[in-house]
Length: 257
Image 1 (cartoon, rainbow, N blue to C red):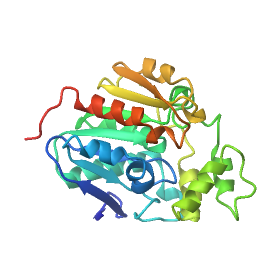
Image 2: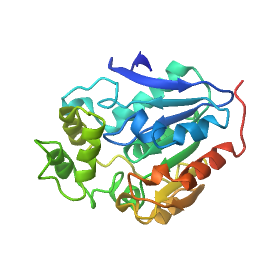
Image 3: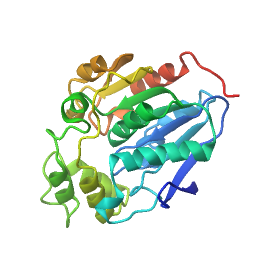
Image 4: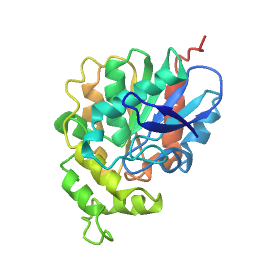
């Protein structure tokens, strides 16, 4: 993996798989990282088969990127600025942006502010974006997620327990995770009507964090919805997820340069 210094001086890690055409930039979900969200699930291999460049960023606090323990280091806007700083680092003029869960909210913010985004694909989110302005706090809130990172995790709620299990599996810095969950406890998304680029909404059919995805798709001016088998952690592994993503990003393909 390669590192760069983002807008506030934190060292962030990213990985590049070379190819031809417009780069596809991936932003993972909370607690996860490049390997857990994209490589181990088969998404990177599916995208590499298209011949396009693929780039995956480890968000601040995650993976191999810097992991400050202060909640002030984390906000939705800070993470969106990190993605835009990565665009600057890569030096391209156009990008296709893909985000899952936390990364979907970050990617929505990036696409709303940066004209370099050509197409946007978001997964692991649904009506929570419309009703809660981001991650669906009606399902699992920041207090539950923070508590799940404490001790041995035995007091974690049913909804928060998978995030603790994932944290243990990827050897996450749990103090950093608690800081992330504190810093991201806000409503970042407002009106979606101005987001006029093509958007793909991908939702697992048993994902409690992506309920009523049709309402999210309807709130976006140019969006299509694909529902795939799986819950929040498994939907991204579904072959249907991979095919829909590849097909969407291949549409109206424009070569770089």
